[in-house]
Length: 115
Image 1 (cartoon, rainbow, N blue to C red):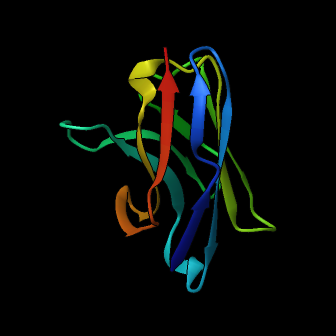
Image 2: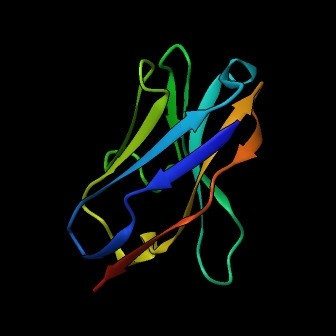
């Protein structure tokens, strides 16, 4: 499975960004897609995940601000990020998972939130 992420950039605190991740290849091997992030000096953490059936879960730190969605026809998952905070600054990685385990990783996309 190949994952192509896009949509990162620089935004002021309180602003919004939308990340996209297009999957190709053996997509039948995954049953969920999601986003992780890694801030400088910190461990990589799960941000949000959505199953093929549309069930989503979020990290507590982003609940109410971020929304994950998917377009199955396009094999694409989106992460709408609103009310961004400086602590959201990180490299965001798209993942393809099966049974809760990320098996495939896209290239990271940098999100920088200025205060």
